Image (tube, rainbow, N blue to C red):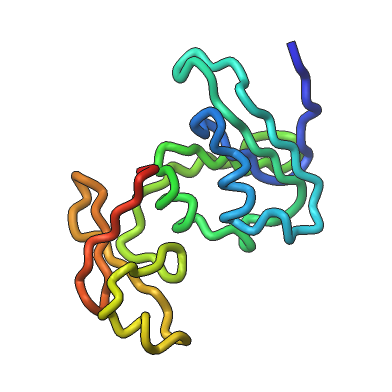
Length: 145
């Protein structure tokens, strides 16, 4: 069994769907951090069968947008590590609003004309996880969701 050393301080993103860790790595901008990062793919999980895990060393919680993470997959657990112990576990939710994470595909939307406008989407149907554009109300459809 593979053993990755523990963290003395940092965060562990656990219960990531197998194969999704690299997407999350780039969407959260972890590639821009100066921290030591371990990505564990296809780890054995009793609950999920297989899962991915991302470990990020250092005090980086304030540099990670948990709303983006909640949008990507709200079943991910965020473990906060201090003095080599889990001091807090955060459970994510679908954010009520996200900005510049997804983009409106409606060619008539103002965001297509005004390039500098932020792409803002609101959660219109939490049960079915549907987001709509704040400007034109276009439903966002993503083949991977």
